[in-house]
Amino acid sequence: MITVLSVENMRKSDAATIAKGVAGRELMRRAAEGIFAAADWAPPVAVVCGSGNNAGDGYALALLLRKNGIDCTVFLLSDKFSADGRYYYEQCLASGVPCLPCPDAPDFSAYRTVADCIFGTGFSGEPRGKAKAVIEAINRSGAYVVSADINSGLDGHNGMAKTAVTSDLTVSVGSYQPGHFLNMAKDLMRAKTNVEIGIAPAEPPYEVLEAADAAGAFPERKHFSNKSTYGYIGLMGGSARYIGAVKLAAMANAAIRGGAGVVKLAAPASLCASLRAEVLESTLYPLSDNAGDLIYNEAELDGFSRGLKAIAFGMGIGRTKETEAALRRLLQTYTGTLIVDADGLNALAGREKDLIKNSPASVILTPHNMEFSRLSGHGIEEILADPIPLAKAYAAETGATVLLKGPATVVTDGERVYIADRGTPGMATAGSGDVLSGLLAAVCGFCGDPVTAAAAAAWVNGRAGELAAAEMGVTGMTAGDTARHIALAIKELA
Image (cartoon, rainbow, N blue to C red; front, side, top):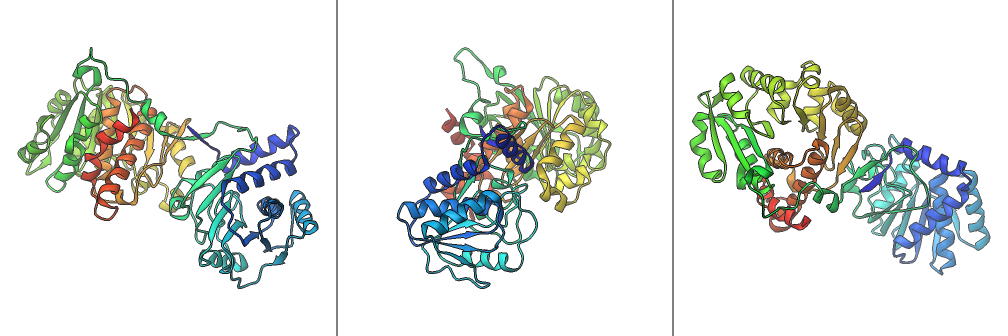
């Protein structure tokens, strides 16, 4: 796992480290050494500093560049200094580092490398005035850009920005923050790394999954085993308008490719003929319907769910009263792991949270931001601004596991928080969520912890998308391409 500290946790952790006797000046020196070691510094270098401790890191970095014979110039946006920052600024002056006020309309095109030390992870809002002009000048400079701690203008809490530096390398200091992964982060950072400087987390951190962590959800396959060892699971969805959704959930046997023993696919009866060609290894379970739209039948639903370890419900099933009745029945009676996606989430919107909280099932909700807005009552802008705390709060209120989809996926049960930082822009296409639901149902068939299963499935799904993009390109790939690469993504883990 890669440790991630919230901005507030980082602030507390930094203060606690200093309170234990590690001077802030020493932490600043360690930060500068880490940033210096992480990048190749082609001279001349412009070190662009704001105010506060992020600027202090820049002054300490400039001092190191000077000592190593690398030509550099410091540009100051402000004449304000933190106490530790002033110390390193004065060291720069004493060492002969040129320190110049930054012009209102700067031009960094003469520099081969620019060190962005304007704002740190505590920044929020929108850069204005000179700061905005300087950020825009860095972005059009053509230089290799190294951002210290985080890209200036990017919110460390949520990865959102109005105007921000686009970096070739971002070097976070002490620990990553959520803003290094969420929302716009991947569009602004071509690469990132973290340097340790001796700051221990004051509170439990969030965690980003790595390959070994995802692999832990997939048990070693024994010779002495059979299909029941790896779980009977069900996929329930499809309607006259959205037959492709449930087909994608099972396409290329996304669930069986994910390791399930047996997949039972429930769909409106009149659609089953067109599904048979796509689900050779799956069992079809026809449901009562009217011209391809589900008709709720309690006996059929109970028969479908009997003996299943996990069910994924909602992919293209339609926004009808029949859907709501079917989901209510599952929430009230089913005792396995119930994954609610797509139209299932729409059926829950505006419902009492006790329906989820009192369910005997282990419920996993898989919304994107719009679906989460309908579920939680929070606006899209609120969710973008505060994704992890809002997902945690909703999970805690309902007792469900929330898998909030995005460029990096957040998985939480209200206490633990995992981030799955895999995927590609090519997955921003119809059906990607349906493939994830099929895969997640498979993993839940043999992984007993819903949070671990959800995080691992999100990681594998993202990696499968990356493999598909490598073959097909991000523009031309489809959700079906992602499904076809699931087995390869899991093979890599082994």
